[in-house]
Amino acid sequence: MGAFAWRWALRAARLPGRGGTAVRAPRHSPARRPAAAMSSGSSSSRAREEVLRDKRAQILSRGLPKQKPIEGVKQVLVLASGKGGVGKSTAAVNIALALAANDSTKEVGLLDADIYGPSIPKMMNLKGNPELTPKNLMRPLKNYGIACMSMGFLIEETAPVVWRGLMVMSAVEKLLRQVDWGQLDYLVIDMPPGTGDVQLSVSQNIPIAGAVIISTPQDIALLDARKGAEMFRKVHVPVLGLVQNMSVFQCPKCKHETHIFGADGVRDLAKSLGLDILGDIPLHVNIRETCDSGQPVVISQPQSDAAKAYLRIAMEIVRRLPVPPA
Image 1 (cartoon, helix red, strand yellow):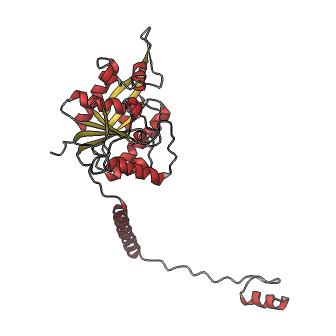
Image 2: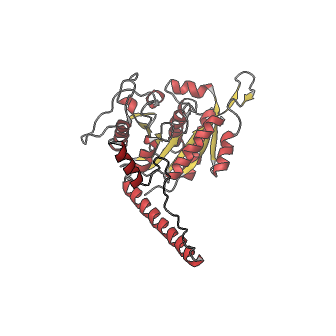
Image 3: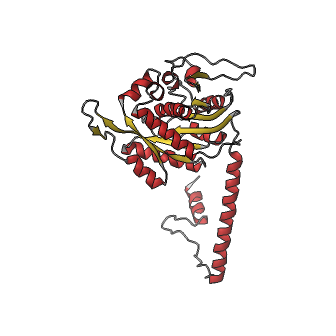
């Protein structure tokens, strides 16, 4: 395009040319609306917002899976923690055993939903692969009267699970739906740490009677424990209370007590959330040693202070659970 053509285009568009200035459209100030009209407009705007909010809620609810109970299981109890390394799996094993020890008429199962780091097989001293029923369902492995299922039964002990989210979700679905649990009064689910896909999948697919949050009194653990409690509230899972783990260490020689991770941090968190404290578990070498050897403290040392702490927590949990279906 030549110089003449450019000058013609600039003049036609009213844009700044050689020494020219842009011509702006005149601004028209809007007429002042009467107060009644403004009030009417704001109320209609609120009404539209409410309609949109209702539609959005309906769309989201249609996208959620319909909760379906696990066949043969009366009540599901989930044990969770916002952070790893707070002793959640150890607590899950001992609480499941304590539920059975407190009432010998109750049948208890234990599901290890920690796909990436399954630890239930070692703690419950179980090895091997599940057998299949004629209906192609997996039979849980059993020890100490507790029926157990874990990803650890399906892979080599030292093999890492290097899966993306969709494969993890598929594995969780199989552990929930393709296991023949028989008749259980309680199924304890040991959740992985955090507030991710597994927690949401379990919470949205099956009805859960209650959740228990495990945390140490350490400030950094409490931050994540709060997130875990709030997550369950958002997905409408009742939080039964919090357990303060590793609350105090007692020297085996001089009996001096030391609060290694802080004192009463979980109690303060429970108070701020309006939740109950279900109990305190001490930091004791016997708890670690017995789980590492596959003989949890509730079974191997039932008269110890540590075992009694778990037994009391199990009683508090049962007290807060809703009445199971007949």
